[in-house]
Image 1 (tube, helix red, strand yellow):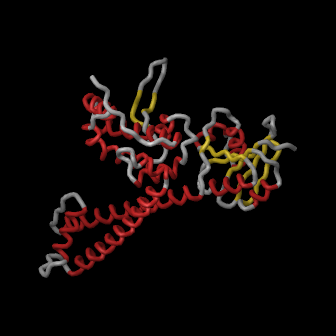
Image 2 (cartoon, rainbow, N blue to C red):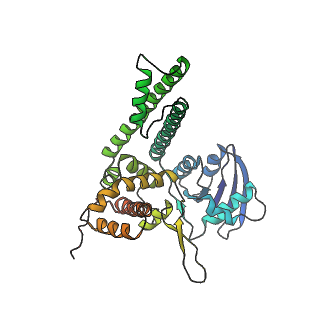
Image 3 (cartoon, rainbow, N blue to C red):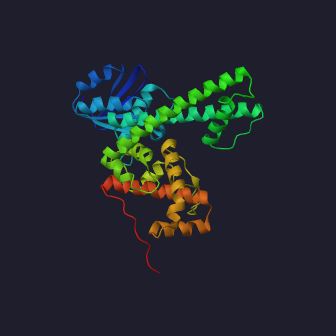
Length: 342
């Protein structure tokens, strides 16, 4: 029995394993507990270990790679077409093994523990921002019920809360004043925790060489840089910059039939968080870039003449993604190209 590739369908407690030989014939079918997979793999000669990119897969992948195996991770949507007939765990594992043998398959880069730590920091910060937004929206609605209309912006809301709660003649009932004071305390705590995360990201961007290079791109700050480095690494998975932009969902969807291409809206595939951060960065940088005497400034001005500003923002975000790929893949520094004469 010579196993060349092993497909592993990971579960929370148990995993299905299918081993294929050089001819693609199934020679092993096992159902093991999650902690027994490493013991099983340690008895095999070095081979390919294929898994879907899901929760817990990077820890399993690093453990298998330490045993000398080649780890191949794939997006679940690329594995689904290889599932035969009725779906079950064994057939899922067989489909994973078969999909990993395809020469055109796209694989996910195995992430280190440091990359996962940074991604976790971003997820926790994003959750805190959502909590703060929900809290301030609730405060606005409660004040509106009491006849107080607040303009947009946190500063105006804080100013009105101070006028209502910190003055001797409070127009609110005692219960409402207590509840709003408690909400303001919670708001202050969320601001403090978010600021602590922002300071940590800024320190990372100063110490990490790749993140420091990315922050030189207009529209990319410490948050964007650290999130991209954690998710993309050295960008070796992508052969060109457009592949990274497509992975982030920033390229148009295609509906081509009869040789007639039709481009639709952006695909919105991949990480919603990274796409959101890039688009927000592009929106903040676009006014300055559109006035700059650079090649990208000339391109942006011409684009704004013939299309809507929102479309130009997304196009700029896609161009930023391509620039990110070039800097990470080739270790270059960002340099603005002057506008061509004439």
